Length: 185
Image (cartoon, rainbow, N blue to C red):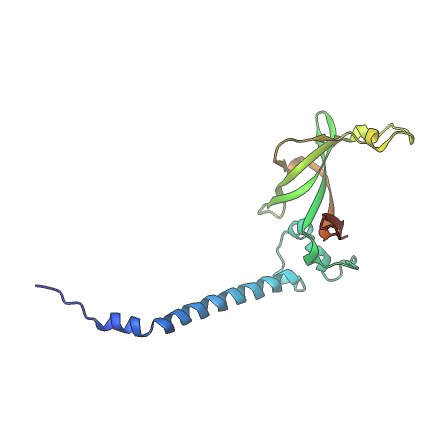
């Protein structure tokens, strides 16, 4: 016996292909708009219930400036202007205390509210002891002896970090089309 395929479903699809495409596009657009709106609602931080439980995320991104009652507001800039986070990480080693200066590239938050590691780009290290015992006549180059780290990315486990200092920057374009980083806060 031969099975005969009913042509009505195929004809129905052909006749309604525009309606089907419009339906899928509408669902996609609505989902994208809803997701964007909900993300912005959570990022506003006005409702503590909607914030991430790990506050380190907001510090690492600079979003904490938008928290109500933080006591420190950005006078001339917005949180959305922050595109670059520069970190000074103080790490205690067997050789002494080391400061790593670098651009924050990535980080991983832990499930217990902590931080697992930070990932830095173009890191430079300097020993804290090199900054002490110099006279006022010494040049700035003599005061801070920096050692570039040749790797592309440098990771530091948070458990090894004694202290972190953050600086937030935005790009600025000049008349000669050069781009520099301008401190936001």
